[in-house]
Image (cartoon, rainbow, N blue to C red; front, side, top):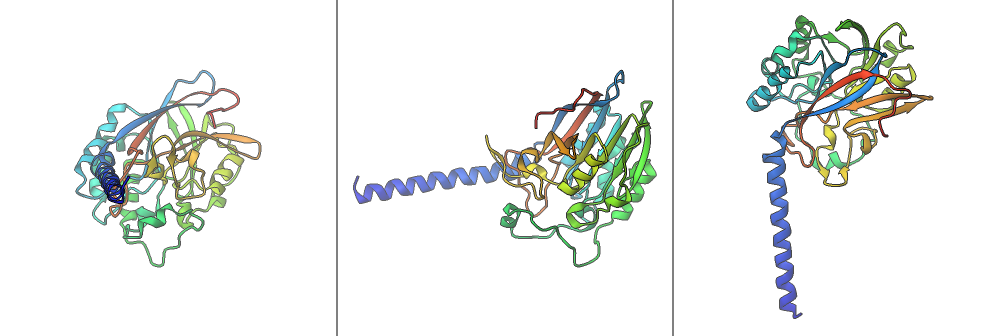
Length: 314
C-alpha cells in the first residue's frame, strides 16, 4: 500500500474510532444513566419454615431536585409490595433535595425501613478530575470543612416516618412476625464508621441479623461477619459506573474486589460466611452523569429459609 493509502486508511480508522467513542459517550450520558431497572435475588438466610420476606434495597440516588423521571420511578417501587426498605446512603446531591427525595420515597415511607448515610448525604458533590475515579481507592477521604447538605432534615423526616437510623447504631424491628436485628455504621469511606459502638456477637434469639453500611470496606465486612451477621447490605460502588462489556467493572471506589462490585455474593471471615449484597445504586454525581454497561438499579431481595452452609457462588 502506498503512503497515501496508509494515511487514508489511518484517517478512516481514527474517524471510525472517534465516532464509536462519541456514540458510547452519548449512550452512557443520554440513555443508560436514566435506564432504571429492578434486580431480583433470592437469599437463603431465614429460619426453616419461615415465609419469604421481601426487602427493597435502595442506594446512591444522588438526587437533584429537577430529576422528575427518577423521582417518579422510585415512587412506583411501592408496587413491588416490599416488607422492608433498606437505604444505604448517598440520597442527596443538592441542598434542596430533601423534599423531592420524600416525594420519591412516597408510599415506601409507610413501610418498615432502616437507613445509613453516605458522604453525599453530608457534603455536596464537587467537580474533580474524573480520571481519579479510575485509580485504586488506597486512601479514604477526610473532609476539610463541615457538612453542607441538610442531612439532619433528612434524618428527621425518615425518623418521623418510622424509619430507623442505623448510623453507628443497633435496632430491632418486628416485620411480618419476624424479629429482625440490625447493626449499622456511618460511612466508612469518610471514616465516620465506629463499629466498636455496635460490636458484639449477634443474638441467637433473632430470626435474622442484618449488617448495614454505605461503603463496603473490608474492615467493616469482616467485623459484621466476624460477629455472626448472615446478611450484609451496602452501596457506594455504583457498580463501577463505567464497566467493560463481557469484562465488568474496573474499580469499586473502595478496597472491595471488582468481582463483588454489585449484586449478591458470599463474604467470608474468621471461618464464617455471610450473604453480601452491594447495590449498584440509582444515580451518579451531577459532575459525572454517565453509566456504561452498568444500569442504575434498585434491588428486591427475597429472603427465604436458609441452606447450610450459605453458598452464593463466590
